[in-house]
Length: 338
Ligand code: ATP
Ligand code: MG
Image (cartoon, rainbow, N blue to C red; front, side, top):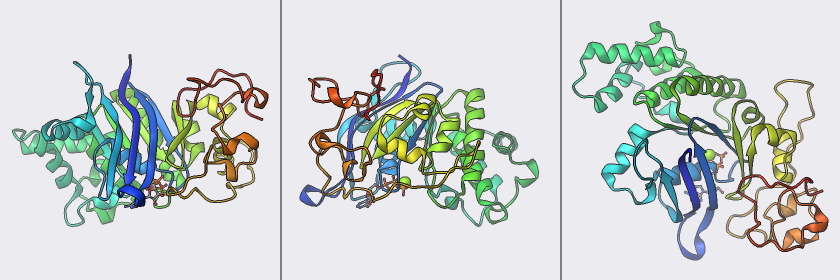
């Protein structure tokens, strides 16, 4: 078993009772050792909520309403992050899992040099280290993320957005975490920079052996750099597959729509289409498959139940006991729903 993080049936709400917004619903997702797992979905699909929920960093009124998040340490039994003691949780967040959240680059302190901020992180976890050691480590960390030594004593405003983001990654790697979660903003960084960052992370992952959960709305970026991809819609994972498989043939019409709503990075330019319609109201989700009102391939049963991915239409009515593949690994069917 090579799981590092195993999310099982995670539910996250904003608010309570009838007023609750069900932002994440019954998510099953496993991050494996050393892999880059991409999480894609339109704005509002619940990507950040999932990341905050699984690290227990949800701001109020966010609440984890159910499920478990099993962390598999290097040695010993898996631990449910949702039931960790405060001490366990601190260790998990700092030493085992590094999180670079949406907009994190703006959380650098504007009045301190990059060197000081990196050295502070190192000091917090290794209080006995010498100043000279910490400075060396800070220099190494910047080198790791491709920032030249002469930037060590820069202030954040002297660096570009992409560089600040890379400083944050360097900071996150300071403690040699086993898991790096990166939540990319939809707008703040352009795709060229996101691409550089993702490439850098995949290279570092090969050298340092951590696992990456990379969150973006840009599926084409993930196709290029991640091993597997999970696609989120209306708080649920609607499909997950190896990147190559998803690219070759996305089974869920929503994944297909996302794949074709961004320009290809390589190859001939395609038309930018976007998916017509808007994301579902999380307070009043459509019945059946939540995507059906927008789906170009919807057929009559979609309003009642979620079709089995990869199963031909004609067989959709058959016994589906234990066969709901949405959110689980790819179905073995030979035919996409068409
Ligand atoms: P983006 O790509 O824009 O970052 P996302 O996929 O990360 O989007 P989330 O930020 O996780 O989406 O939001 C998921 C849903 O939860 C959205 O519909 C959002 O409106 C809702 N939501 C987020 N924060 C709150 C809150 N504090 N109170 C109520 N609803 C919220
Ligand atoms: Mg987000």
